[in-house]
Length: 227
Ligand SMILES: C[S@@+](CC[C@H](N)C(=O)[O-])C[C@H]1O[C@@H](n2cnc3c(N)ncnc32)[C@H](O)[C@@H]1O
Image (cartoon, rainbow, N blue to C red):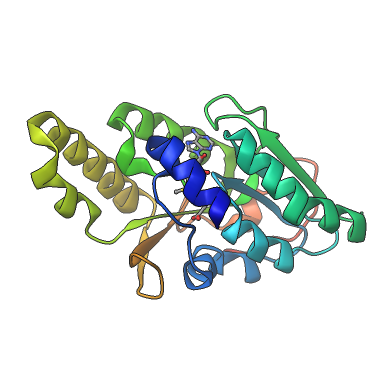
């Protein structure tokens, strides 16, 4: 918690909040994971001090692979020390790889079943938001799920405070979100048990397509769409 507050004051643009997400939000963000059958590939982007990471680690099974992408070295050190070192020691049957990089540059194997994203999109320019979503969608397998969140009503609260250029930027970000939700069957859940309350959104790549026909070439693993 202290580490998060310190990093937020050092770099609020990328950290995006002054304290970490709650277990209730972590639950909403990782809901899809339980319903996925077989060995799973999970990617987390922007874990910070790891509230979502912690929940994902608890749900991993033998044969799963978990990639984590975090650009802040202080958060990477904290994740390694507090969560990942002990996990790897106990569960050598699960691959967990931490990439200290921005998601735009990270070298990732792809074909993920689930991407859990904690990035503070409302602090970014719309062009960056669009290119990060494009990258994450490309990394998902067909039928896979992308979960992201934002604070409820955040753009309405910010709009009077940011000037005309800021309002145009926020409108651009809202537009990216709306078109993603339309295109990828977006489902939203308001999580009141977070400070501030948050809206978790889950997108399905190729919604409606039967996952069994879109399997990764050369694998026979069974996969299911999240509930
Ligand atoms: C709002 S914090 C979220 C932390 C955590 N997921 C939570 O909900 O408490 C955003 C995190 O994303 C990281 N981040 C920001 N931009 C990033 C990027 N382009 N690639 C990877 N990580 C990024 C920040 O360093 C920070 O740890």
